[in-house]
Amino acid sequence: MGAHTTEDTDAMNHDRLTGRWKLVHGALRESWGRLIADPRMVDEGRRMQRAGRAQERYGFNKEVAQQQLNDFVRRNRRWNIPGQ
Image (cartoon, rainbow, N blue to C red; front, side, top):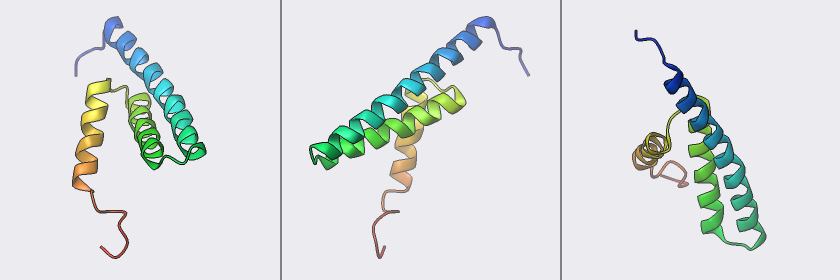
């Protein structure tokens, strides 16, 4: 196992702060979408929150978090459709 450098730690902290911002921004976007009855904006807000949660929790950078979320959605595309 390699030792983490200060640069690695700083980058991880920055990614976690960015993740926290995504959580807040996604929640605001979801709320606004509900207010104006825009289901697409509600979904985008939820997606931002999921990516932000992963980024905050694991210190992923934006690209890694987004790629993992996209992979998950692709694998589980029909999980919320009733009767499927």
